[in-house]
Image 1 (cartoon, helix red, strand yellow):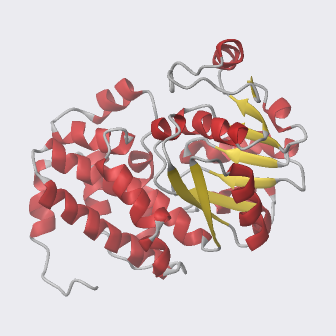
Image 2 (cartoon, rainbow, N blue to C red; image 1 turned 180 degrees about the vertical axis):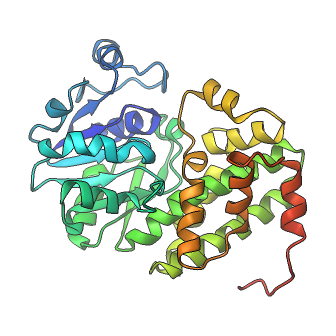
Length: 333
């Protein structure tokens, strides 16, 4: 029985703690708010995020990071991408030198344009061989309901990916392994931005043709960016690419999709975010992804359109006109 720390008790962190417990591990789940940790410890339920999930007895909740990390063989990071660095500064002294560190966060850091494993490496000093990222079509409520799902765990060291896959595998959750960390992280980050765009289209009343067009061209943007940064183009045809993209763009369970729908219907971003009380990573990371693309000369018009609406006050209704009026070109460019 391995000891695993899950840092972050939102929807995905809580669901993943249950996966790890069902896989036969002893799990400590860190919650930022002491009252939430106490609620989980007392009731075995995280009512604010996953009220229908009763956590196994192997999951212990705490609001003390040092307690969660004590003796952990595997450390799973499940906090919003833009807050990962500030948390890691606090947590790093308690992470064992031999521990494998797994990122569930999907985004690109504002200001630095770093992927999450790069942030982890720089803040903690952990070598890339100890780091892994999990990405795929993993809507938390469906995982919590034990509906069959698969994902990808990527690490630069095959043995690390194999270890994480072994630690996380259950009858309802299957992990494939890969070494393309760059591709898995970029696929997980950009799909959130594309999901906002698809949601906007739905909110504006457009149908499946429009949404399929945005998804497909969004995938093309993602592949261009990934290849420019050294990723394997084939990664984006798999679970961490098109699989995650479809789930996030089409499901009403997707926060990024819901934000987009509300924006398309004319609601303000402030009211949408306030009502959700959760992080939509596409809103948080679209600027940094666009900046990263600019740094390597990659054109990402869908990402640019989302930034224009979310951060520049552009009217959502004008996005379609801007995208459709672009210069004609071969599809495979």
